[in-house]
Each structure stands twice: as C-alpha cells, then as structure tokens.
Length: 336
Image (cartoon, rainbow, N blue to C red):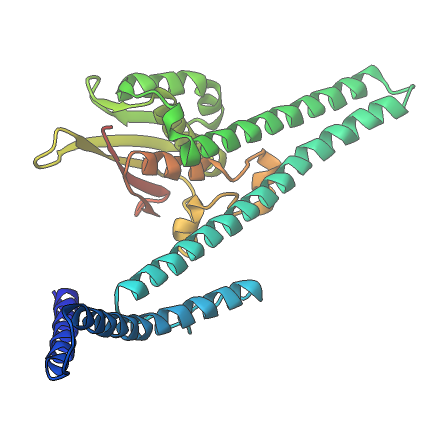
C-alpha cells in the first residue's frame, strides 16, 4: 500500500512539472505544439532521472559494500544497510541467500573431513593386520587367522560407514531416488527383530512393539526400516544388558487434508544419556563416549539417519530422559 502511494506521488509530481512547462510555453510567442511536447518530455525525463538517482544511490552503495566484503573474504554483513524499499528487499534476499549457501558449504566441508577421518580408522586397522601377516613368514596359523578375522571386521565397519553415508546423502539431496508406497509398520519391525535376534539375545533385550498389525504409512520401506533399525541398534550398543524396548504409535488426521501423521514413542530403560547432551545426539558423528563407541564400531551416524528420516516425512523428533531410566524418543511421520 505504501509502495503504491509513493508511485502515485511521483506520477503526480511528473504531471505537475509537465503542465507547468507547457503553461510557460503558452506565453512564449511563436511556440509550436512540438516545442511544447519536447519541453514537456525533457521535464518528465529529468524528473524521472532525479527520482531514480535518489532511489538507487543507497542500494548501489550497499551492494558495493557487500561485494567489497566478499572480495576481502570477510563474511560479516551485519553493518550493511539496505533502504526500506523494493531494491533494498532484493539486496537483503541476495545477502540471505549467500549466507545460506556459505553455511551449506561449510557444513559439507565439515562432513567431508569427518568422513575422511572415520574412513581412516578402519583402513589403518586393516593395513596393520595385513602388513603383520605379510611381514612374518613364520606367523602361527592361529595368530594369522586372528589377524585375518580382525581385518575382516574392520572391512565390515568400513562397508557399514559407506552405506550410512550413502543413506544420508540420498535423504539430503536425492529424495526422488526413493519410491513411495504403502509400508506396514508392524511387518517392518518384525523384519528388524529377525535381523537383530542374535544381538537382542546376547544383550537379553526384550523387544515389545505395541503397534497394530494394520498400521501402514505411505513412505519408502528402506527409509522406515533404517529409521527403526538405527534406533534399536543405538539401544543395543549403548543401553546395556537386560533392557526393555517399547514402541507405541497413534494416528493424527490433518484437518482438511487427506494425509495423516503417525506419532511414535520409542522407549528403553537402559543407561540413558547425560542431560547436557540433548539434541546434539542427532548431530552427525557425535558420540557421547568417543572411545567406547569407536571400540564398539559405531560411526556416530545412526541417530543422524533417524533424524533425517523423520525430516524426510516432514516430521520432528525429540529425546528426553525416561523417568524410570533410559531414554524416550518422540517423533511424528507424515504419510507421503
């Protein structure tokens, strides 16, 4: 509304100038119609140029300051002031877009460095075991077998890390890769239970999903499978023995839409997490106990995959302490 009023005032101003110019010419003897028109046009053009010069001076200066900061590799744009008009709005959007792209670049660089560091650990281990075998012709068969087994375990860890990085990359940038269909939650959880049966038995873990056998969601089977498997893996690796796992769900219909949300509560009664950790537990490569997690072979990507899987479904996830010990993960998934 304010912008429209400004334009109206400018047009009135131009019209007044033109009328005054023509009125002056009326008193000039011998002035022709073309002279009137030329003088009026000049008056209009001069007025427009004056208006535009005043309107563009501030945004041009702000853009100049912005590009000077970029050239000097300084990223503090807080002191750049754009005018409160449409040109200023464009300038602010350009600066905001640049800052977002710069943050994304820094994040990718950090992730790349972390991945390189994580890959180095199993590769170094494999190399050490294999070099020991190659350099010792007299190595006893039992020791050689032990080294080969250790190298094999490191290769599994390496494969697992590459798979997890691939999953995150697809969730971040290649969401169209996943085919969407009906996924039965209960059947998916049974598949995971069968895969992790030996681990659960070794930890004496009781798995109790309280999910209707008819509960389905429009999603991708691999994403749903990965989401719940990583939650359960996290419990098996960190919660300790004799742990109970429960999963509950409830459907929330979205008013006026055909889609719906499913709210999940995942609970275990294990060791829990320190209060100060909070949502940092979902950060990529974050580990509560760095040494212990590395010893167990954890990559620090499991819960990051969980969070990104939830975001893929336009949902949210939170973690809190279980009053009876352990943790509670609460998240919701929208049917796609």
